[in-house]
Image: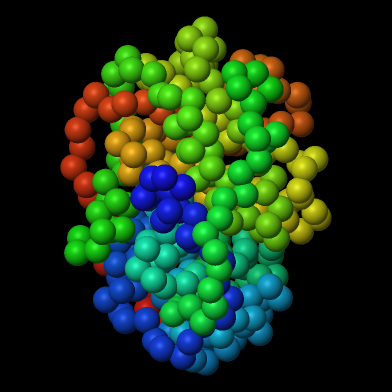
Length: 172
Length: 172
């Protein structure tokens, strides 16, 4: 952990307890600026984002997501829209493109002192349908996940889960 | 770009020209430590990584990847291994898990002054097969992408590709 960027990366932990303090709209926009700085296949940027701060919708999200029942003041939902940006090749990489944007958001939030947690949605059809309905998105829009965002009400130590046995030098 | 973490995120650009200087093995390990600090579904960590610095193998990668013909001194190849970590639920999220690890690696490299570029492999069967063969991985191992790593021999300005029209507040 000698390098500052490693400190930042290791400090991002999944936060599941948040204070009641809302997240400023300006900060949410900065998180989206970070998300949209991610690379994408052939620079296709097939992403949109829903930002949920409405308490009724947040409650509906909590009730719809078996692994996402957390009291956060905001949620960012990355959406795949096959009608923008994609071409016959890049379309195959949308999960990777959106996931890169998500990780940018998580790291940026952590660097700003905010907490986040990545709740899986796609490719679980019931979860995809439920989230799509809550944000009133059309049927061709696929939510990848739900990112809860808030001020952390728990402390976690920086860490990596590096394991040498996962690494293969030149050959498997 | 008022916040230091945004500067870092915006500074990560896809680098396709590298100097001949090799990347220290210690630095490659630090990049893998960053990768393995990523979140994964149910903390399943279904990842392994091949590190390629052998010139013969790098040349074979260049020849196999139509969008990856770049002269870099090293490549990191994140691999999905369904036999480690996964369970019937988390298995569905492996692309997202590995992509989060990739983005951690790209950001960390950028923060250290190194350049990277993410070359798509999965889900293109000919590319998956070619990369698997070069690193001599068994047939159940899926390479997600190839990350070239090196000292940049080109300069790119920090940027986001943020667009307000991609953002939906509370409802689509």
